[in-house]
Image (cartoon, rainbow, N blue to C red):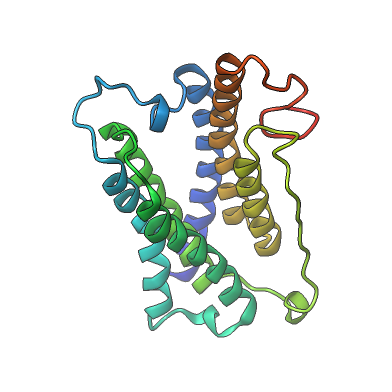
Length: 221
């Protein structure tokens, strides 16, 4: 049973990688249809704050359930606790704090909300189940960490997205798993298209916007 689920988790991770590339292609064509880019004519719009809380909630609830589970065999190890804690803190901020900071905000199209909810459920299960049940790390993982820092808005339009990509690449490096890398890759594929949208929007809206500034990757893109 354990081997079957571990195989399933690996398969889901590879599928997430593939879906990341599909998402990149689709978003290059249709754009990111939420927030400032949401159409006022979309059917069944969901209020921005409610949409954000509900769509992100599975990524918070599923790790908490994993922590409470009687069979969370790997959560007696510091590396697993730290990695799952990173995931939990991120989604606690996104679900509970960021949503309260939203002032107004355009309603989210229903299909965009549903897709986000499905992804958060899928990825929440993938990350939390892998880390709580199957991930194995050496004892020196905690004593030999790596950290990346930097503020980059002078060089790129979407430094916040770059930071999120770096965050999840760090998570993937630390977990050193296809599950972690699948999440990092999917995050990159979806955020890079929105970064391009933001960058072009700034260029179109502000005549004096720096021409040397890139979208999301300093000096490159």
